[in-house]
Length: 591
Image 1 (cartoon, rainbow, N blue to C red):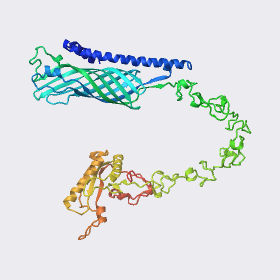
Image 2 (tube, rainbow, N blue to C red; image 1 turned 120 degrees about the horizontal axis):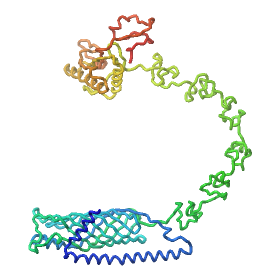
Image 3 (spheres, rainbow, N blue to C red; image 1 turned 120 degrees about the vertical axis):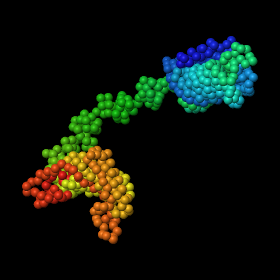
Image 4 (cartoon, helix red, strand yellow; image 1 turned 45 degrees about the horizontal axis):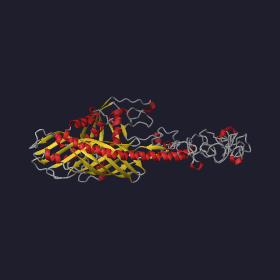
């Protein structure tokens, strides 16, 4: 801002004496505006004094105590006419060339404004000015600030101020002849504004525009052509009156009546200006029951009470029945029994001492029915009174996974599984001696190696099993196809599918050196097709598969009770099945 003001100051100092003929007009404009300002101020002061005189008889407060200034903001657009024909540019720069043939320039501005202090306004504005002529053409843009004094009366406002801006201007005669310059814009003005409502206004303003160019750069144009040799950029200063019409949008600058306690009653009408009240009571709090406790603090505003009980009647026994209505004021009771203790369920235990006042019970259980198994479900409602269970299951144990095995005997209570497996699921991935068996298929896109999303969780489980079994050193991922199609295509497809599974498992954390992939095409079907016959759909579906064959692993050891050794134990190293009793445990039977 300091640099901006400094530049403006330098431009004023550098002006030639010839430019001084413009400033009597500026001074005259400001002097002409001043009386209107003074008159407006005097008018407001006279009216304020009269109002204070009238109010003096009724109140000791002044009118300034009754109003508060409400800051406002807004934005607007403006279009105006600058009455100037650019004669000095014609005479001192375009002499001998094509000159401007115009009597006015037109400007289009946009601005944002704020009125933070009463009687003042500050705007930031920017705009563009042009005469709308060609060859030569002229255009200037600018941006600046505009402080002003503003005086409002009802929906009318008068303002006087000065706009100061910096910008650029340029003239072009043809592609080989042009000039560009920086400029300072000074714009004193007088404005009359009419507010159309709370968010819009129109205004008319008049004033004086003064362009002060500096740092002129020319191309093909020469200062002082056929004129005195000392002609300079100062000779391009242009000034003249302007008129503008604008629209403004935003909040409405206004005075609002003071309301210190925020009760909606203005202080000038509020008999209790520092205590929130109601309009019906002239701004003072109401006391409908006349007990001396204001309704705002009275928990029983329609029943006379005592301050110690927040405006409600006394209740010595604290049973919620006021002493005035309580037949047992010193013994807590219930409203239905006029404040005396009740025994709703008739079990001989007063409700105040009965933990189950609506269920007949026994004294040993504090008035509640018996609960033999202690599960919180009374025996009268418990379908399993001797076995603990939750209330939502009528006192019987839950079967959380719905597999028919009760949670109290289910080794996997949150995973469904058959009773033969103690309620645990039979997993989809099982590690055997020679392979990793899967109970589901790996699905691919038709005739492609793209793994379908539905098989991701199965492959994730395979990856987890391998990572949990470091003894497995090397696994061959085998791809197999059915016999439809050409053998070469089937071979390539099986290789690509095996490689896709390989890549997926590596991405899921399985070390590359533990995996290899190989495609076998249709050379190793699970179901052989008789010669001369076509492979059925069912057989083809079985033959399309991915297998995981263990190539290398640490030596397997099994710890089996002597009475549980299988008859074919000596053949275990040559088989792919573990023919062991259900309860026999081994380290590789199922992962």
